[in-house]
Image (cartoon, rainbow, N blue to C red; front, side, top):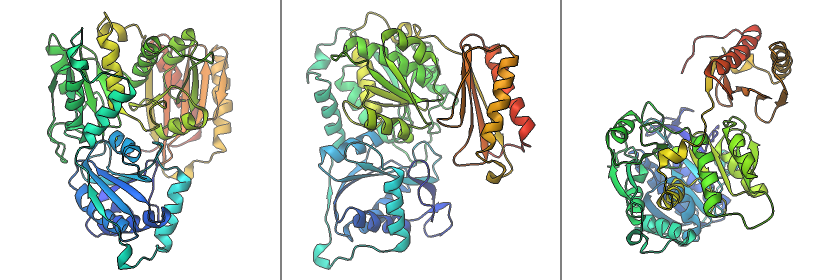
Length: 483
Ligand code: MG
């Protein structure tokens, strides 16, 4: 059975239906048994987001875990970063987060975490899935049934851990010289308790928006994009002394910032800014160039700004899991991607929105300039994207990338683009003096995505996008978009 997708399991809740699109408590029970078997009755910490479906899934999952001899600690409604760091803090072997991240309320799922803060990789997920499918579960007697302990103060532990790691004094809020005023919008999600707790301890003045945990997400949809954050933007813009807006997704692994004028800051522009300011605050001690990892489709503004600061910007395949794995393999001081996840490997390998918010507040408290002034030092490179629906996955073959490559290089040459290079790290990425374009078949649906960026004007970005689209139109017959 295809349990795991690109980020753990994420399906529509159903009480007992066995359809491939649904996730049921019975499945969660069996996953509990499979994890107990995999970990040989290890210790497991379980957290959940505030979705209503997370409760029956948690109960069933924990039942499976203790029935295979695991020692379980439950930490209640938490953010994904809190769950990921709690594996370390509570000295467990595995962390399980019950969440469907930013998806709409009918979805639920689980994501598994290792002690070092890395999510389970595909090999680990495959082992769990094989145990699940074969039902070769560890058999225990009644005497070996595990225990469940409820932990009630994990948010406080996470905040204290951040303070300790960043060497922030416990009395920090009394010694703040510049008051930072923010509006925080946890989107009725998991961060409703911890985000205000953190901002208060950091000495910020803050107003909350959509801050009652509610799994039906009544305030806004959970994905922190400009459409869903319109209310936050309006409030920030209308409030004179508010320096910025902070928005999180349902499980708060993603964080997006709004400047004082109500503009949403594209996450790679924010990554560029925070990398620059972090290195100013904490200059590197070694002679080696500081390294940063970001996916192939991140704006080239990051190279433009950080090259001058002698930072080595490395590219990865698309997705935060790939960024985290490259950081684990190669080291580096920071990783991030355009959905709004930021990873600080010196502290842990899980994307941590709360740690990122803390670093930003520390930077701003020490700066004479406001967030808007500082972020405006980072240029905006015009970017456009489009997606195209194939009739089915079988319409696409990897070998077609070669045809796309040849046609695209020819087209770029004809139009006079210079210094063309092509990378097949993920899809096909054409890099040239004036910008780049990525043509990539989606891993999960019959869709080809095109992303284009220019270093100069929107018209140029449009020209680049259109060029790639015209190549695709020569090869494929696309249908109406289904999503
Ligand atoms: Mg998320």
